[in-house]
Image (cartoon, rainbow, N blue to C red):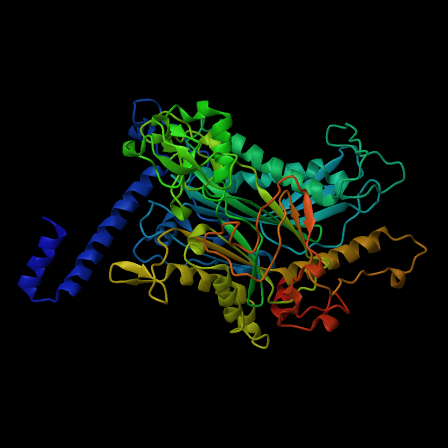
Length: 623
């Protein structure tokens, strides 16, 4: 019996209005769908049942490397709470139980999709670590913690009585999975570990030698020769991030032969280290710096639309990747047999403009990048071009692998927080594409600012929850509310049906913490005859901000952002990839610090870097 016939029968029998019956039927179907999802989800867990160990073709099913879970800092207890968080009909907004476990009381919120996939395929990770160099025969060592504690005064080595030099760092990451949860879960559990090892490999470049003539050694007691040309500390950290992304993708490729690793994922990472913020992005998740009601993107979306030329060039250079079924040419419209012999506008892979070409039978093949805007796809299959996984993904009805056209290389951007005048309302917003699909950068900044204004500093009981509330408001803004049979935003437009995950990270708290750590490190290394009062404390300049871009140049302007995040329409645009770094100086018209901010004006805020308007509850929890 069809839904329409069933609805008509109910209307006739019970004299209900049709739209009421429709809502009843919709609720019944949602309950059935949720019950079905619960059964299917339970089948994913490892089970001793022998039938669960057999694959679809009769071969042994591979075990899971990591069981499905939600982010550890949410502190969900048991499978029951995980299933409640994944209710596709209600789509509850989930926030952490104890925000003191999150660095700087940062905000996080998430909501599951509306039935797009069986489970929430987004994953998130927070990690606090220390890079430590000890004066011992073992070279350097490492220390990590699950939850955040402010850096303490450096301890002394028990053998040499020298201060242990260590660099604290804080890591936030979002992973947006597709076609399964395997790749996102693997990256959430392993990416930060790989990054820690890569940073430890260059710790002697991040920390200066403590003695004249001291040789830097790694854990294998091999001498690390310093390069002849000068290389900045930032370049070593950028290199560690790029190497980490590449190794993570290779690890997933190897693991898929031993473990069940499904699908792929995009990734955006924010690393706070050495007084700077490093944002690494591969995919269509996004990081945006919000200062007042202005938004400044710190990442670009990597989609078939934004990387159309790169993919077409690769297809032209290696035509064997197309399997004889696709073409690297781009026509103004897809030609058909009636167009053979006619002249159509087209572009070669090396062209950005258009020219005319006489259509031949070879031109009737499917384009390697099909569609426009958000609907563009690589080989008519996938809508993102960077990330992890997808090693076995193939084009429809063919054996053509799509992975050669995808990349794990991140775009890394740097913000020098130490040198900037940062206010209490300056935040970094990280979100998966479920947030950005229906919410522009400017609306995100306005929503955050409006939410923060609801928490006056005098109300100490609520003040600490302001960033969590902002994250919750952002998720609500994109998720909307269920209206009859669809999800609608507050302005009655279509809301996202995708998973949504959002971080709201305060920058002032990190700057305050970093400056205190730096002062303590300087006091530990001062000469005995130097008085403590003589230790100079560098003050951050109150000038306009400088943003460094690694690997790709960018420029921050006041032009509104496009929701698609295309370089041609966004505030930041990719241009020459050969440029390693670009400094956006004051004379380029940046007006970030001219924006009204909650807190002291620049002339007052630059007097003492440690006297930022602080949350009394935060200081109490950090102590």
